[in-house]
Amino acid sequence: MDGVDTGTGPDRTDVTPSAAGPLLNGIPRQPGAVTPVRGGGEADPPGPRAERAGLAEPLGPGAEQAGLAGPSGPGVERAGLSRPLGSGAEQAGSPEPPKPAYRWAEPSDGRGWSGPVASSRRACPAPAPGSLPRPWRLLPTPTGTPFTFWYLAVLLLTSLITEYADPAVVHALHQGFSTDVAHLVGAPVPVLVASALWIAGGVASPYALGFVLVLTALERRIGGRCTAVVFLLGHVLATLATEIPVGVSVLAGGLPGSSLHRLDYGISFGVAASVGALAGLLPWWSRWPLLLAFGWMLVDDLMAFMDPMTNWGHLIALAIGITTWPVVRRWRRAAVTRAAAPPPDPAPPVKVPA
Image 1 (cartoon, rainbow, N blue to C red):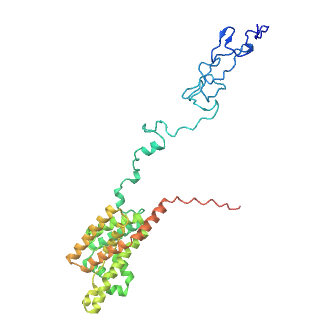
Image 2 (image 1 turned 180 degrees about the vertical axis):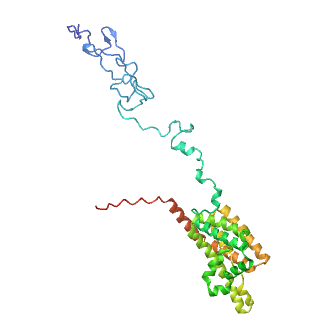
Image 3 (image 1 turned 45 degrees about the horizontal axis):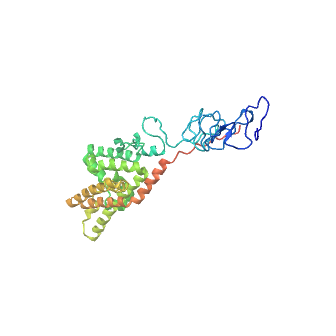
């Protein structure tokens, strides 16, 4: 046959035209049809969507062909693979892609999504038990507030003496420990310390309750030594501010000489200074009500004109406590820093040569 290559042999089962033509052994050739080749095989068609022998569906562009027995395309799962392969997917045996940041999980409480966004959307956790209000912290303890606790023990002892001792003995003790002008001139330091060991009016005085609550709260914030400094600062400065004018008035002839032996003892000046200092450590919604309530009580006592020198001393002590705000706030920050610092590592054991 002209233009047709014929062959002989058992493996010669097909004939191929020598030139591309529309007919193959008298059968019209369809576009995209498989072209038989020598040996019974098939030639790969050039089109991307041509069907292969042994494949049920066409292969998509960019799919991996080696070793795959199923179709490839976006969102289609291959046989033997646990995840879909899309355009440009990894070959079999390649490492898994990173896990998504947001996935459905079953947390311990059985609610919600897990992940960065889910964590931020969850409700705020309940406060720890240690952050809940504890009323017993309003009272002093020997380990938590040693200065206030032992000072209160001394005050209770002196109050029992005042209550049950002979009145003449009690009067002599008060007179001997009074911070009047005569004692301040002769022995200022002993009388300033001894006069703060008594409660004027006994344990029923409002300053006794103020001592317990105010000094306990202040010591828990700035420590015992700093609380003692604030208390003594108000006690000493307010005493001097009220007694020095008395001495000057006696020298000037404005007051009689008996004013030099005026009884002046108690803890009220120190408590007033501690109230002013504590207010600087409280939030604004409790700071100003405390100052207004305590200040109004002091002004009301001054207007009653029962003991004007002592009442002026209370207002002066309150002002002294307010002036310590920058210092007590710095002490407060230092106390918080010390409490948050980790404990130091223990020193390694030292080997002693034998």
